[in-house]
Image (cartoon, rainbow, N blue to C red; front, side):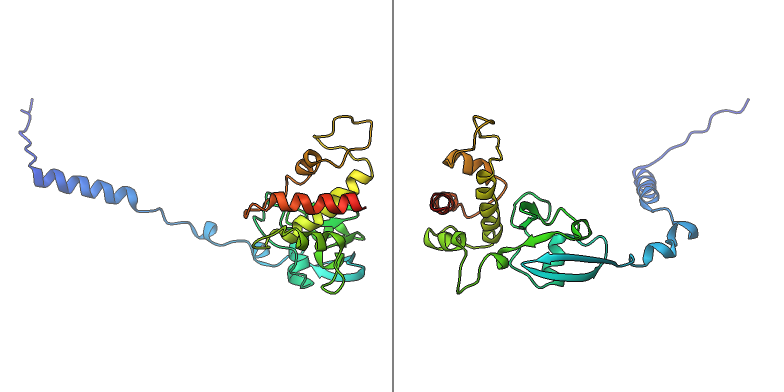
Length: 215
């Protein structure tokens, strides 16, 4: 039976062994040729789809990638840059437009889903020479500071007054069987999806209330 050998490891040898082990664990495995070559179909753009819709009273006929959002269609294809891209996740409301009388976060919906729809952006509500009453009220009551969220706020506010007029309840409506009241609580609840990072909420509320009472 062989006698056990006396193996002595000094500090230098131990250090080199540790460095070698660390380097070997950090070298990434080389991908195979099959994994590194993507299918040719994945590299090609999607086929374009024809989309027709009425935007601000004008019939638009476009050829779009089916992945194009309504927001990008408005901004990139129709040059309607009044609608803003804020969070691009449907959380800030800056991209709000009115589609078939309903307010929509245009960053969350695809353009091809609105074939034949009627879309109204802030440009379609009024012009600099003839402002929509809501636009004029926002100016009068200073319902903005930086102005980035303002187009979405105005489109949402116009749709909110229409919702109340049609008797559509909200979470703040006390009696679901009656027409909602034009109250501060009701307006705050309905406008809660539109974020103003400048904090002009009190002025926005005053503007909407004035237009609502006038209507």
